[in-house]
Length: 431
Image (cartoon, rainbow, N blue to C red; front, side, top):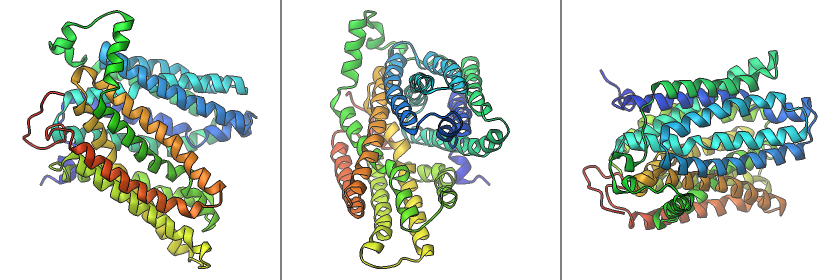
């Protein structure tokens, strides 16, 4: 008997599975170093936390720049060349972390690594969108999400063992995984370029001058609907950021959890994603994508209210039992992960469909950059609430923000066609 969970991963074209495999291997490499990078460069190499933080800031800025370049290049020269180039260059930049012995070296490597890795997401997402349509596209992006989390989680486990044996080996291994992915994609993927390569007018009239190319890119990233979606994605990313930026503060200061206990609790996030990502997205295959995003905002709002209950305890003089507090933080993690499960594939699919095919990479890059901007805003916003002694007000504020996101998504729904919104059997109209 066929099970729904297995049905959710069946029926894709071969390149979809290859991209998913490539991302699993790539994120396995990221997982190898993620828990140890800051600790290594601060405690072992002796770089100040301020310099490490500055390097990580430049890494994020460079990643955003790389994402913009990657989306543009994916539309101009093709998805496969950009993906392979990103992984080939990242083989060098990530392995170079092992050679960073001072602050200047760390900052330089972090910046270069952000730039080379940033090229990959818009090209890979555009290729998935080129090879799928409708609810199949939603499932394909969900498959990438599962591959990412499975690889990242496995990397955590292996990285812990490897770092205890040979510290620098985790950085070299991270680079080598990118080399493996570059070879895999170069040898197995078909060349999938923008819609113009299939004979569209855009491809037939493509201009070679830099000025014309930049004009094409500017037009692609300023279309009102993709800008509207990018702004909404900033808001969703603000919610994402709290899991790393502020919830740990509540869990440790209010409940007294240790970092090890908090880390164990946070395993709920990848566990729920790997378990429910594919079946849940398959179950809403007939929904409008915007309605799935509204449900996502609802899950985020409920998650914020769960943390609010924990934060209110000391303020009103109520001692919340640790078991109850842990249960509420666990509830936050499950609810926000359900919101993430719906948000991630649906926003990518929607961005793919409201962007003209010849501009799909650029449109996806704008939405990805918006997410990174939201991460930064979310961390800064949460920190400001706590610094001003009003941390307990952060959570209802964010819950109200989620309601605003839902209203915004419904406003966007009126500006997209049923086909662009994932409605089964609908026919798309011109942008």
